[in-house]
Every structure is written in structure tokens, then in C-alpha cells.
Length: 95
Image (spheres, rainbow, N blue to C red):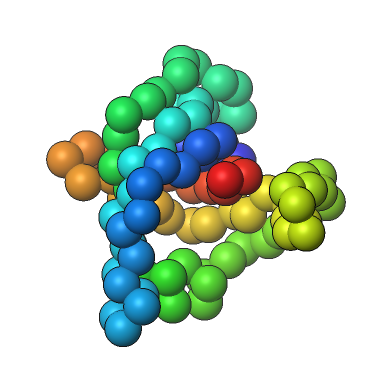
């Protein structure tokens, strides 16, 4: 990943079971040129789950286990943060 948002924490419930639209609080790190620049917190990410799953670039082999759920990092081409001009390139959703 060159530039983007690494999401390490998701907060709240904001997913429509009917449309798949979501809006959740998030925290993580802003990355530029492949290096972490600074932590970010109290931001909102939003989009549509169907679009997100359809556009997954790759899933990493860095498996994270939470209860009975296992998943690696998920690389997305874009993730919007409303109110920001920046869009992320990666989501490490471990929540």
C-alpha cells in the first residue's frame, strides 16, 4: 500500500441490513509512501458493503483470531471518510 488509511478499530453499529449502506466510527493510521505518518481517531468511514466485498483487492495472510472468527488484512481500492478529501487504500478491520 502506498497511501491510505489502515483501520485498526471500528466502533458503533451503523449498517442497513436492507441496502448494505454503512457508516461507522473508526481509528487507525494514515500511511503515505508505505510508511505510517500519524494516528487517526474519531473519524467516520462510510460506504456500501456489497460494493466493498465486490472490490476487495486481496486478503493478507496475517490471520487475526477473535472468538470463532478468523480474517487477514483486507485491501480495498477506496474507503471514504465523509468530510475528508482523503480516501484510504487499506482497511485492517479487526473489530
